[in-house]
Amino acid sequence: LEKFKIQVRPTQPLWNAGMNFAVVNAFDSAKCTGPYRCFNFEYYGYAVGCEAWDRHAGNDFPHGQWDGQVKYKDAAWYSLPGPCPSMGLHDKDQECISREPGGACVGGGTPTGTGDCTYTYEKVGEISIDELEGIENATEFVKKGGYEYNKHTDRGHLNHFWDKKYDYAAAAKRVEITEELFRTKYPDLPEYPDPTCDFNRWRFYSYM
Image 1 (cartoon, rainbow, N blue to C red):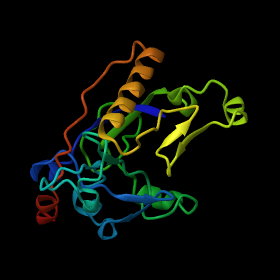
Image 2 (spheres, helix red, strand yellow):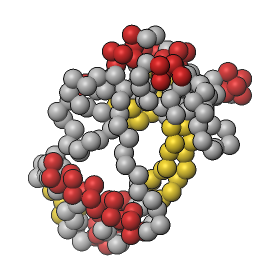
Image 3 (cartoon, one colour):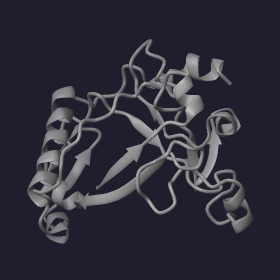
C-alpha cells in the first residue's frame, strides 16, 4: 500500500466551470477507455478527475450504480491522466507522447494549471499487506492453516483484519489501523486533509 503526496491545479476551463476536479477517466493498461471516448481532454486538458458517491451531488459518475454500496466513509477515486492516453502501455511512442503529454508536470514543482501541467506527485511511504494485516511470517501463517478472508463466513482464520468486510464500523477501523501504521513507520510525514470531490457531471458536460 503506497501513499503519495499529490498537488493538483485545475485548468482554466475547468475552473471557469466552477470545479477543481474533472470526470474520472477509466484507464485499462494505461489506455483511456472512457467515459465518452475520453473527449473531455480536448476541452478541459489533462485535468485530474475524481469520483465519490454522494447521492444527488453529481460526483457519482460514471459509476452511479455504486451509490449506497461503498462501505468506506468519504471514499473517492481519482484519475491522473498520463502521457499518450489514447494508446495502451506497450503501444505508446514518442510521437504520441509529444502529441498527448498528459497532465503530470515535467520536472515536478507546483502545477501551473495548463493543460499539460495539472498535477505533481511524490511517493512518501509504503506498507506491505502483511504489515497491514499483522502477519509476521506468511509461510508459517499458511502452514498453520491460516487465511485472511473467507467470503462464505465473512471472516478469516488466525487473522481477522478483513472480518465483517461490508460492515461500516469494521471498515472505519481498518482505515484507522492503516493510518496509524503510516504514522508509526513515517513519524515525520505531514498529514493533509482529503480534498472535496467537487466534480459535477451536469455542469462539467454542459460547458463542453
